[in-house]
Image (cartoon, rainbow, N blue to C red; front, side):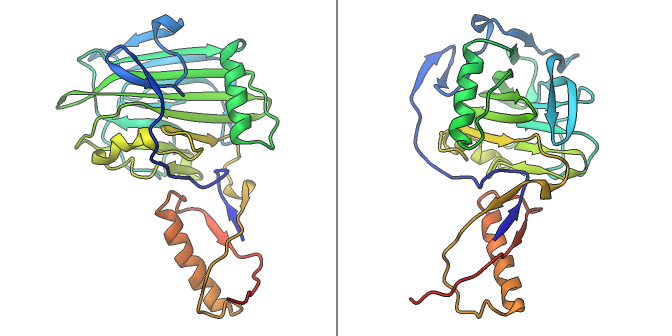
Length: 300
């Protein structure tokens, strides 16, 4: 069976708590990259008039076939590439719009408090070493070496109309040669009744992903315990692929029990449809196409 996808693998759900240390007013999981003024970050404090900050990239970043030299970090929890944005009422992915979006936690943030965006770019040093190790652990056949990293952290972000509900989350953009990744890290995220979602979307939604449960505000606290790389609170995606989902292929071998004759084309179509519906529940994008390459009948 061949699966055409912008992702490299299906998410694996786990419910194990990570080790952590205490800083500021929140607990920061150990998989977070260092952030804040102590780490040498540029720290942007939002106000009611300016809700975005532009980051001029020291190295171009490739996102699904498009190359960018600037990124806008928006206080409402997402990155855009073409222009700043203060949108907080949104369509859920896929939007089928005209903007590439990376959204570690897109929601209606209250910019009247102590909400900050901290960011820093790296082209050498321990951060590149650590990122290289992380990516090679998650993609062991790639032999990847990071040459540029951008770490953007939303710290003490409150929801609008909701006090004492600060959230902590981080997105890490990674480049090396012609390969690009994004990592999303989650600390304590308060539940909310506001619209919210985490994932990414592309121009015309040729590739998109919604982290399961992230578009339900009451489930947002679960982000720090879920993962697609067996690291609680971390999600990782390879994002340098072109706009066509067929440029990325993932193979899966399954052993299933079926009482239908899968040698018949009609039964295969029904089986694949039911399988896709089940996999979508666990994070497979709706746009992914399933094809059956071969089948072997075994004795029970």
